[in-house]
Image (cartoon, rainbow, N blue to C red):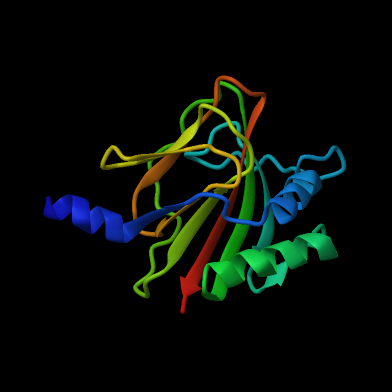
Length: 169
């Protein structure tokens, strides 16, 4: 029972994370043929396309004013005082599962928010067996040092998620 209580303190699920109109704007910006995707061939993230939207204290040149505004809203809701990284992942149908990983190894407590952009049968799985399913506009917020992995969808062409790593107030 203690383990469950400890787990609940480390992970939180939030449905309807963004206002519906803001969420639709976000999806429209990202699920767009003009949105640039990169294939980094990262170990542990096979076949995944990504776009690093914020890193090293600056936004990517591809971040539109609309995306900037949306991420400011999201970060305010997260009570973020500093952003480490904002990344969008597009994982194709039936891609291999990711390897177990942590987003950051920091001595200062930090958080990860996985915001699901589309409904599908993929999910975020944690090393302890807990799962957070890909439901549009739901967010899974957890300590960045928790081992997890993305499990690809089998029922859509791509599983889209936004990954925000941050320090909380």
